Length: 343
Length: 163
Image (cartoon, rainbow over all chains, first blue to last red; front, top):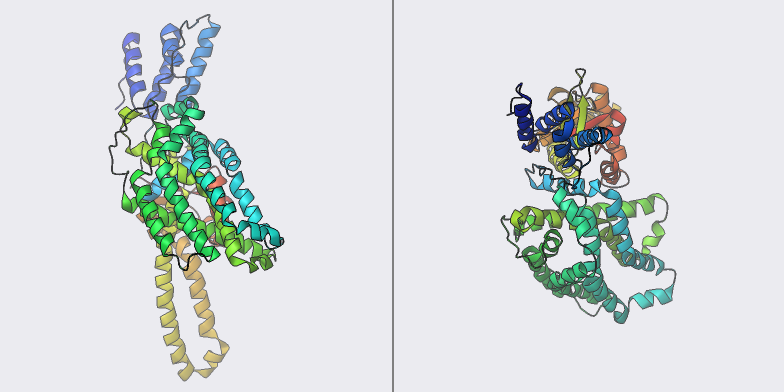
């Protein structure tokens, strides 16, 4: 309910402050409109703290008040930090949660796309090599060698992925609606974060490497069937479900060495992870199927004569495209599951 | 904060409505697709029964393909008319959209008209290209109001309702 604005200017000023502290946009905007009308030192002091507000109307009005005040010769001696109220997001079901991930990425789309493209270059190089294999026999022989693939996968999953997380993760964080999260995105960077990422994602990465190796061994004919890959997948998935949010939590938590307090059932939620897996499988299918359809439409379907190779190439390309989405999902889940006192 | 559709009323008031995202819309679509498939199966069974009857009773009707032609019209109406019917008569909500709290409205926030509704649904063919709605997904991701190709042409958006 809006605090009524009464005649006395002091009381109206204090009512405006009450309205500003509320979480409702119309009340906050009404309060800013009153402050603009009021002008003077008091309005200037309040407005200076709101120039970076998440509500664009409030922030624009605050900047206008500050500009008017400076024209009148008012100077702020100490720079106040903007303390906007946290924005609320209503998420009612799993699909709205996924929508929110997309909204977050879209808020900083350029940053996320640039970062993810830059760090996906190794994947795109691998895809190009795969696609060139039918034309260059030596290349096809080379990529089938265990001494080429195993080090490449180990290096990527163990040492390159933490780099992707520390960079693209920050870009995703910059798209969060809360100012605290956005500030966090510009606060952490560099080698300290990289080592944190490396340590927290190590166990998961090792089992993921096992999984890829098992598939690769089957592909080359070293292993007769896919049972080892299935077992590796189950172990990796169990780790993913249990500790999948650790890397994301490291990005979110501002204080280094702070203890993580989980408050909701988002962490270690088997069915939610399974549901997410199904959604991802559908997305892989849509991207891979679309790529194959496009090749067919443009009359390039003769390149599909090497189905396994091309399928692997398409899956890796789809993986590169979906990486920011998976990271965004995990960061959002960690944000929802973490106790706010940790942040 | 979900991205919003901003509507300016003639009284110069501003109304903000949360827009629906790609995943909610896809889920609602799958829900509707289930209903449509069930309808098509029932229609097909009825068609086979009628065709069998016509074959024995009126050989002329059978050879002219009247029943077969009528069946194709019914299939077309089921596929495309389903959405238009619900958008026009059920306040912009198909059963799938209702289940997931979504609604189709025009850019001004009003209920969609017959032409807009038909256009947005007919252009599902364009959204489907090249495979499994890839064009629609890309369009939803890159446009400001999360519109698929059909929405862009028809001037419509899908919003989230609080019901």
